[in-house]
Length: 510
Image 1 (cartoon, rainbow, N blue to C red):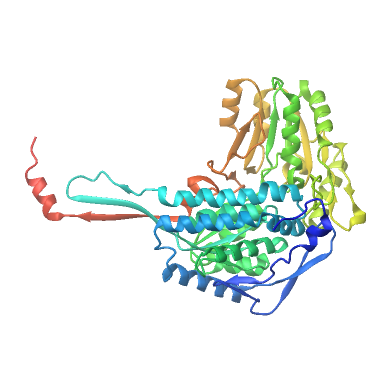
Image 2: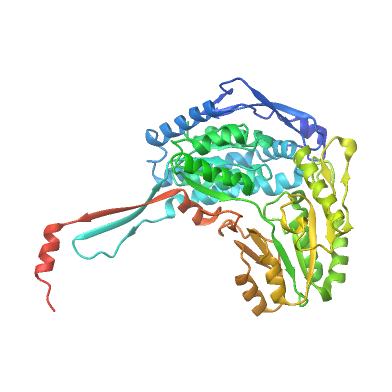
């Protein structure tokens, strides 16, 4: 559909988001008939009532996925044929860019410019990239000698449960769906309860594209019910989770308490950005720092939430950050000029405001922002905020805020900067700004993070793995060919011609 992005009222009224579960190719109510309210973070008002799935519905979805895997054509389909269906799926998603962007903006409070210009295109690109990989991956033969054939093959792992976060509903759906389906698996998706509708709509488009019934199922609901049921289900072969470290621990327990299913975790972060005195473009560094902490309202697991800056350039860099922070405009997410939307829900708003209050009480200096704004809207907005003089041992420096709040600390030597960067329970991402090539290489190696960017804020692209060390997660990586590997099982097929082996052995001489 074509939508006038300048008319928020038309945007909000132009779509009717789906609200029911999608199981076995059919739109269904929850078995209990219960629903829950999904709210608009920008207004606090109810958007819709969504089906509240529980263990009974997960059982139905897993049964549909298992049947589709064991009896359906998907896993046995030629990779080239899977590729064509996934490409058709991607094109259909692209044709509904405006519709999906609107749904995501309404339920997640994200700026419409981000949803239509970044999130949906990323979903389309991810689906296409993994689709194209379907028929370009080869198995191997071992160098086992005459009369023996050792085949090393990768096979679909089976039924995969994917539990999604609310901060990037469409993007994260793509990061899971793309490699899971490309590898020949079937999937049960549980979106975050705050952002269910965009995921349901994507699954509807998959069915419309010709993806067989039961291959992709969506069970909206709460983590303690639907999410736990997926984690504990004995017929789920693998769970891929993106979200908080606290919830990630639950999925490890669920696996231990059930069938020892594989668990892939992408969890929290407290990512550092180091600015050395020799950085030659402080304006560019300031722009990247603001992007890294204010993009998506700081609700980003890889947000550069700790700035570690060398004393001699502190004042100049802070001036640049203050200037650049004005580019980040808090406003109605449906207005294209808005660059910072709402916090996802009231409880999360209070959490972010609590961190700000604690930082003030701890003696940190609030250099920029620090307030709730747009209260008259009924929504949950926090302005871009920067604290200086932050004690590295303080709560603000150590805990994941998941909001637009930057903690600034200074250092004297590169060795001190590395020590501060690594002084965290997390290890998802990091950034370093320097013109010294040796420093860039040594620091990139020394920082314990899954992705280290140099002189930019970035997570790589679809060709590079994304994931972290320490409490930021383990078990696999999103994006790249590595994502295909984690959704497959490695099998050895051994064939031996014993007669040929004896013959070759009897004639061997030196």
